[in-house]
Image (tube, rainbow, N blue to C red; front, side, top):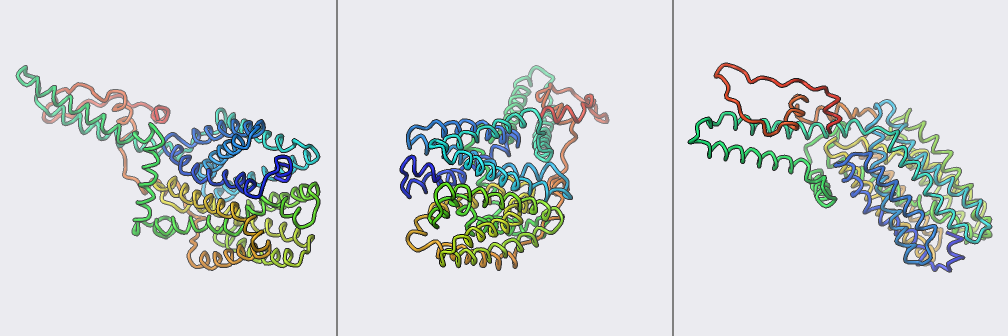
Length: 491
């Protein structure tokens, strides 16, 4: 940001716009990504994110105008928001409950690692006048690696496949009921040919209607978005559905969204986005501010390893509350250091703040939101909380420089400290423990028992088989049973 500000002569308004447009579009990308992942699969969502990220990163590197720069930055925001909704959910669905906390926490670890690498790349290009173009363009490399991994290495989420099979089994049951009605209808004589034809036509239309009901939201994003909004309304109206965390579905949604709000409203991304300008305004030279940015980012990355360990060994509630307590007191230290103009103490305060944040409040909201919702609402709940995260991120990042200029940096950090202490009190009273939840068992218990898999495949292959009259006390012949692997492949 320091290089871009100097090279393009960016005003405070344009600096805030460049940062905040990505965050705003991430709030849009979260529900879009969740809807895509819910209907087409987690792998499809992750692959689409990777392709769009490669394109927009290269656009940023070669942008010649402010308009193209903003458009590309908005595209980056869409991909980041979508990935933030899909990735923790995908990781939680692919591992056992004993390892879920540590595995989901690696998402935060690699985000922090990416920020550290970006800071080191910024340091390498600190003396290059056009170094910011290399910094932005090189982001296409990890996105391309992700696309190859999605294409050739990563499996599909087993829980998503199970949900997909369940939907198709319900469709098979509906088709079987229509076919049974058709078989019971007398239509052997020529005089009843018209009636038999009418029943067959009704059967076909009913099957088509059922297929449309199951898969209509897969055809385009808008129906999927409507389904997502409908699930959010059901979540908010659900005061009796109890999750495995021992709270109602509505309580889970509210506390999940509040957790993401506190994570962002306590000011973490102001520190990450504006470390360079903050240190430059504190009296450090531009090149020294860029180098110190790498130091601050390294604390964020190193303590993310501690976050992985803590999330795997201790309760989610204890880790989140302890981390938030450290964040709140480190913000008080920043208030004092910026008010007294103690530059070195400001650097120490920023490092302490990120150390406390990365070890708990970084991974905890993502892990808890991947676990706390009933399975039928998991994608919708994760998308809603992620949207709250990005909207709050946008409000904080878009207002930080203006707020600091209108008051002072110390006053701004004092407001963040107030949010952190208030959030600590609310979460202490209402945050449930989610560590012991088994997502697979929750899925099996929350859905009705479907028809056998072979009936699903038979109905999908031959949905309009002609009726054959049966004897009064004799069962219909049963088709050959295909393998369960064939059913999953058909999904």
